[in-house]
Amino acid sequence: MNDYIVAAEQGYYMDPALAPAACGPLQHWHRDEPPSLPPDDRARGTPIRVYVNHGRWIAECPGCRGAQYASRTDRRFYCVDCLNAWNAGAWARTLWPDDASLAVIEDLLCRRHVENRHWLPSESLAALELENHLHPQALVVAAGSGAIRLPGIF
Image 1 (cartoon, one colour):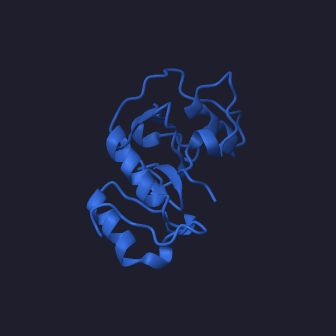
Image 2: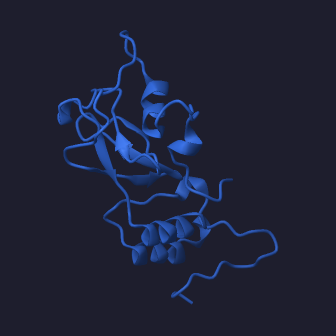
């Protein structure tokens, strides 16, 4: 089991010749024409908020709902399904929680079994902590460690 939430850097093969955000679209390319990405590397338009689904950081296309792993280090998104038609074919920026919140979100989620690791941008840190408290069956308890203590709950 992972003790981290998987992002593009762990979920895709990272070709050192490519920017991390390009690796996902090129590995998922399923069109008849050869793969192509926007020539302008700048992201523009409305940012896409990332979320966690089954222990994976996800960026979901607002145009067609296609989804890919989100990249921690290259915060751009390009949909292989609709080619970012909703964004005039340009790269879109991904919007992540701030670093402090990101660390807490991952800490709280990594206490759970992978299939229970979910987070939406609309969920507060307190809500995540409360979910862990209300659903102890979803938590992972390391061998010999006893019960998991949640800060601020007990």
